[in-house]
Length: 330
Image (cartoon, rainbow, N blue to C red; front, top):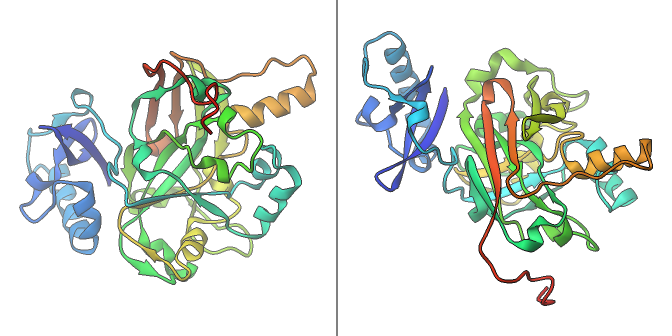
């Protein structure tokens, strides 16, 4: 299934996307919830019911000719109010080469490391508001993410895929200037925007893309080519199937002695060559005269991943008289 959250009468509305039309979940069946939060919390009952409703729509038995045009609504993040947000390091080439931490990042090859981000900064497609200090070395990060669909604790990787409600594109906007000089894991604290969407694809809809997990690893992987365009020019291309660890293993690690809840988001980390920081480093190694690239106001970032859709964000400046770095407030 393809699940979408959009703005309806000042609140988030969960809908099923079929073709180019949206069908409100609570109108498909009276026992289905109208929000993603409720849908995830009642997943084991709601998911099979929604699958039957989807089949009814496709067969013309349910809400015939009552779909809403996908392009006619204001999309929200598929999971508008996540309960938490973790982001991992699962692409080891990026992990080792893509940051100022250098050799220390070799430790991340041995463990499924993740950090907690600001779940209140999650947004969908649209404008990304930036203050002056955000615009210093502003970067995109080409990633994917899953959402947890049921409560768990001490989850073993062999069972962890049962806790995955869906997969979506993620773009964690990175303010490079605010990360310089400290370990970048700690510097994620000032996270101001992470975009997800435009749709959440449930695992049953990705079966045709499944590939074996990396050798000596457990869990589902998907052959999903991903790319990022900035102002219509492709700057990055990678494949989600190259994750060195699986989401199932991340779930096992994240739930070790800890509770996971419906609505928790876990990111894959940056795909190889999935940000300007790594692209700039590679460019300068190959050409000393290479000109660095960073995001600028007005830039349009478009991320695409086949079945996962296309996520578009635009960088805009927020009205603020001064930046925090200039006033030494950090």
